[in-house]
Length: 298
Image (cartoon, rainbow, N blue to C red; front, side):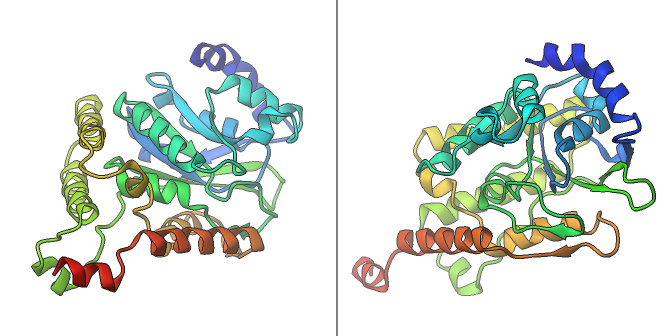
C-alpha cells in the first residue's frame, strides 16, 4: 500500500501545486518525526487526504498513514478521485449503517498505533461548505480519549485570494485528563472504567514528557501496546473502552481545529451530527449503573 503512495507522490505533487489546487502548507515544524500519532483534520475539499499527506511528507518517508474512510468512497459514490484515494491508502472502512463499526475502527487503529503508524481521521464525516466546521462524530474522540498518543490538529480550506488549497498544521497535544468530582476520587474509583481511565491519564501524562524523536515515539507506541494488553486481559470491556469520551471532548477537538482556521469560520450543527450525539449519549446512559444497582452494591 505505502509503495503505491511513494510511487504516485511525485505525480500528486505536480497536480496539487498546479493551477487547479495551488497547494500550500504551513506548520510543518510541528509534525513529529515518527509515528505513532493521530491526525485530526476538518474536511473542505476532495483532495484533503492527499493535501495532508503531502504536508506530512517528511514523516511519511519513515512510516505509513492510514485514514478512516466511509465505505461510500470505495463504492464510487464520492467520485473517481475518492475511489482512487481509497486504492492508494490502506483505509480503515467506516460503514455507519452497521452496528459496532466504530468499535472495529478503534480496534484496528490501536493495532496500527502500537506498531508506530499514523491514523488520520476527518471527524466531520463528510465535506462541509466553505467557512463551516461541522459537528464531529464520536469515533475520533473515543480513540483520542483511550489511546495515549499525540494528536496532530490540521486545518484545511480554500484560500480567498486564489482559491488554492491551504493546509495549516498545529502543535501536537494530548487529551486533557477527565475531571472527576472529589467524592468520586475518594471512593477509590470502584468501577473498572474509572480505574482504567485513570491509568490512561497517567500514561498520557508520561507520554507528554517524552521527546518526539524516534526513540520517544517508540516508547509511546509501547504505552499504546500496554493499553491493548490490558484490554485483552479484560480489565475493561472493549465496548466500554470505545465509549469513554464525552460531548465536551468533541467540542475540545473542534476548538483545536477552529484555532487553525482563518477568521470567519464558524462551527455549525446539522441534523446528522445532533442525532449522532444524542444516540451516543443515550448509549452511555444505558451502560451507566442505575441508582438501584448502586444501592444493591452497598
